[in-house]
Image 1 (cartoon, helix red, strand yellow):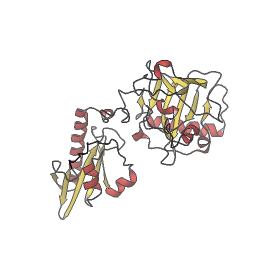
Image 2 (tube, helix red, strand yellow; image 1 turned 90 degrees about the vertical axis):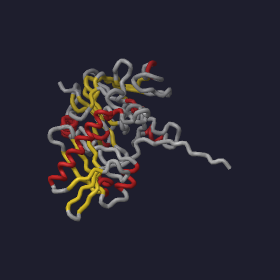
Image 3 (cartoon, one colour; image 1 turned 135 degrees about the horizontal axis):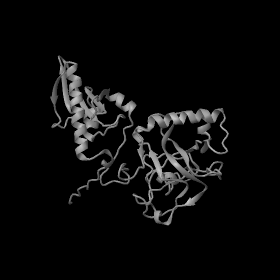
Image 4 (tube, one colour; image 1 turned 120 degrees about the vertical axis):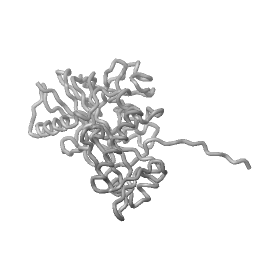
Length: 334
């Protein structure tokens, strides 16, 4: 028998201790206060010392946590809404989970330093545990959906003992099972510090979650080769200018036409990239001839090249600071 429910909690990029956002009681009550953004769900995809995931779900009608007379062996589909945009996303799911029906304190060895990321000393709660979790990275949360029954609740049982599936439950179950099937190739099984980085935690190496230096160089070279081939097929001549601080990598020319192309690549199928301050300011924001060439599946036999104008980049991608550089301000002697 299928045993499936969905739960909904606040939005976090990595659920390993970073900021939590959303329209929930605890989060709303602490806006502008010391505890702002410290939602209990902040660690929902951070494993404890024994590999267990401890999941918090906000109360349904202010007092109820998910419970069932048969509490073991549930698939729990985790949903969250990005406060900046419309729609709800699947941010991950648990397999063979246990439902406690109440909120419990974390084990003592997790309150201050448990798991693979330091935990703050203030209290955290959970009502579901599992040894198997699948986490959807933020760059793969590209399929939002809307459903009135999901918007109005914190959780709902879709199939299992004592569950009577009506038309709405069957519709939502089919919808979410389709989402899980589509997201499964992108999801990270049993996320941890080793296979996904949170820059708010891993400040020493914020790019750690994007592969080794050698891997990134391999992707970069494959992406450049794909873009050069793309433009040469269109009859353009190529000039490499990566050694110049001009805000782009290549100059492609054909007759009187000249375009300036910044190349970005990823080994995955979802476009994601970093822009330096020079690429953003001197390139995208100031150069009408600037283009972004985004290469996905860069290491495959059939990499995909997409070309974006600067205004398209700003409309289609969220451009946000990833890290900040602190430099000592010199003090002149008077």
